[in-house]
Structure formats: C-alpha cells, structure tokens
Image (tube, rainbow, N blue to C red; front, side, top):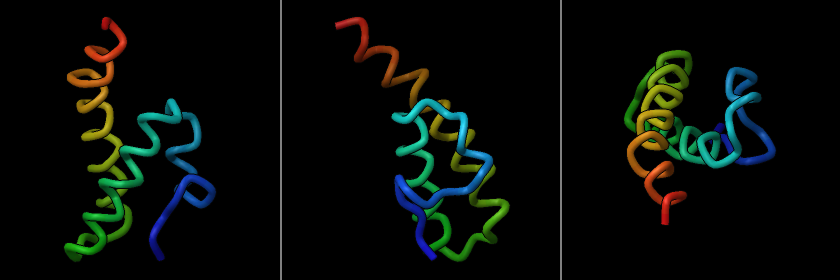
Amino acid sequence: MPWNSSYFPVSMKYLDPVVREKAIEIANALLEDGYEEGKAIRIAIAKAKQWWQHHGAFDQRR
C-alpha cells in the first residue's frame, strides 16, 4: 500500500515534514520498483536527508 502524508512508516514520524514528504515519495517509487518494504524505507530516509542537505538548505538561503 502506498504511503502518504497521513499514513507513513513509524520510522519517518520524527522527520521534518518536508523531508518526510520526500522520503514518502522515494519509498513509494522504490516499492513500485520491487524493493522490499524495510529496505525501501531505509533507502528513502537516507536519500531524503541527502536531498534536504543539497536542495532544501540551499532554498532556505534565498
């Protein structure tokens, strides 16, 4: 079942909402590609945090 802003893994609960939304987007894409749920969650959180460091932080400086 795809995740959304109301229904997401507990491990994403304390992420910043912007990072959580990105992690949900990535995790759903990984699930569609056939990744196992636990692995998809771990990868998505790590990639969303990387995305925030490279893009989100930059956007705040403007």
